[in-house]
Amino acid sequence: MAIPVYIVIVTHNSAEELDICLAHLEKQTVPIKGVAIVDSGSADPQFLDDLQQLAGMKIITTENIGYSRANNIGFQQIVADREGMVVFMNPDTFLSPDYLAQAVNILNENPGAAVVSGKLLGYDLSAMKPSGKIDSTGIFRHWYGRWYDRGQGEKDRGQYDLIATPPALCGALMCCRLRALYPFKGDVFDSDFFLYKEDIELCLRLRAAGWTLVYDPRLIAHHCRGWARKRQKMSYDLRLMAAKNEVLLYRKHPGPAMAWALLKLFLVQIFHL
Image 1 (cartoon, rainbow, N blue to C red):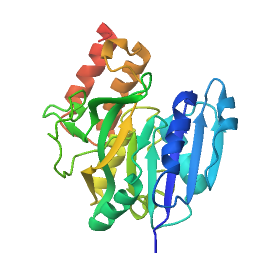
Image 2 (cartoon, rainbow, N blue to C red):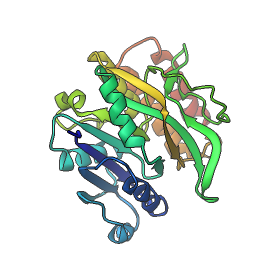
Image 3 (cartoon, rainbow, N blue to C red):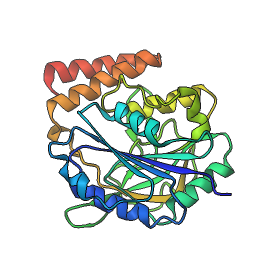
Image 4 (tube, helix red, strand yellow):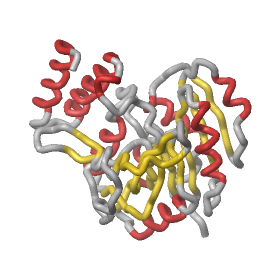
C-alpha cells in the first residue's frame, strides 16, 4: 500500500515559477494526497486564481507572516495522517519525475531518518534551462560556526555523489517523515524565525530527538534560488535578518559558535557587511 504523500509550498510573489513547479509535480510517478499552497503576502495574489489545479490542492492566502508560520499553516490544513511523507518545497524548485517515488523508497530504506533530500542543482529561469552548477548538497558548518550549502556554485562533476548524513538539509526541498514531525503538533518550523535558518533549526531539533538526516544523490531537483547569489546584492534588511536569526539559532541550540554569530551580527550592523 502506498504511503500518503503531501506537499506544502509557500509562495510570495511567485507567479513566474509556481506554474512550472506544479507542472513537475503533476508528472510525479506516485499519487499525491494533498497539496497546500500558502501565499504569504504577495503584492498581487491574482496569479493564484489561474493555477493549474492538482487533485487535493488547497490554496490559503495570508498577510506576509513569514516562511515558518506559512509552512505550519499549510501543514495543519492538509496533513491528516501520522504515517507518510510531507514535502516542504519552494515554488522555484522543480522535481525530476521519479523524485517523490525515490524519496519514499529512501525513507523506507532508512527507518531512522526524519528527512531525506538530494542533489539540488541550479536553474536559470530567464533561459529556462539548468545552470550546470550545484545549489546545495546538504548544509554543513565550519568549525567556527558558519553554516553553508555544500558545493554551492560549483560545477557538478559527481564530487558529491556519495550518500551522507549532513548536519542539516536545505529548506528549499525537504522530504519529511510524518511520524518524526508528529510530536511538534503541527508547529513544524519554529515561528520565531521569519525567514532564514528555520531549516537548520528544525534539523537540529530532529537530530536532538534521535533522528538522522539523509542526503542521497539519486534524488535530483533544480532550484532557481530567488535571492541574489552575491551577498553585496542582498538588501541590508535581509542580511540583518539572516544575522539576527543566526544568533537566535544559537540561543535555542547553545554552543561556542555563538561567538561567531554575535561577531557576524556586529559586522552587519556596524559595517553593513
